[in-house]
Image: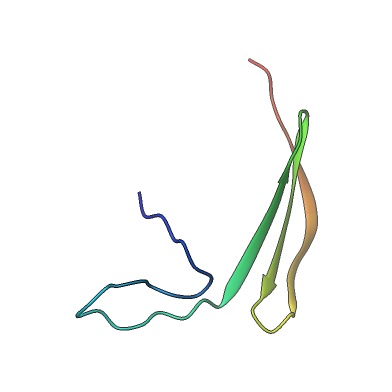
Length: 57
């Protein structure tokens, strides 16, 4: 699993090409559902907010 600690940056990664983020995903997690939205780094809405219900098994 890769953990990013900076928005759009790769900290201290030598001998790698810098990768620039294109999209930002926002996730709001609550008890019964999560709301997700996707925007570009320039603010263009890629995916309007949508909900995913949590299933109890």
